[in-house]
Length: 267
Image 1: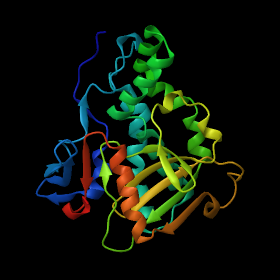
Image 2 (image 1 turned 90 degrees about the vertical axis):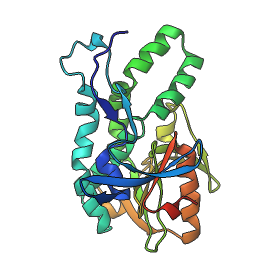
Image 3 (image 1 turned 120 degrees about the horizontal axis):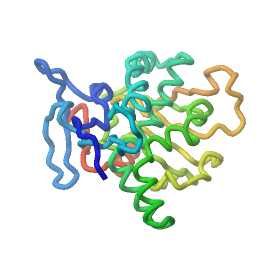
Image 4 (image 1 turned 135 degrees about the vertical axis):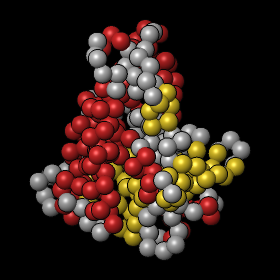
């Protein structure tokens, strides 16, 4: 299949990674850990979490803009991210900031190579080759309009925050899907073929959003969306012993790289 060639796509936005980075001269530098060799490095945010033509759609879309997926599905949430960060720093979100926080996390959960690989494995088990290839080509656009649009509007949000020196780490696949049963989290892959999750109270989307904040999104199974923000978004201080648990979950959801504010956060 012929594709339009253009620059590499950052599947974890640089504006998002800046929260874990330190500015040096003209660059933002972040600690990284390669999961294949456990070798830590300091790298520029411009050089990590990117892949050539990850979002390039097939020419059958007949568009003159080869970056349509980036522009329409992803960029709108990235542009709103600085406002979300301001609300998180104050541990208080406006209605618009809450919408943009949820939207960013949900969209981020299916824009990475790991998501792509996991879903193709599942799709190929239940579909013939032609159907599987079609799902692979269009999965970004498909997921952008199927189900997740309403989920952004309706889901509830818990923001866990840290007040001491410990930090949440991040990864090259930061927004992940889980089932919570009896206080135990089970990782879900193949999310594109799971149509049963939006009505499951144990379904969670989890994402570290700064070194001091981690967000858990859950299906809204009864709360009216017209009620106060306090019922739709709750801020809770996390117990110290839970920080390492969530960092292990972030590591489990990663593809190849972990990111950290400080090197000692890689525990």
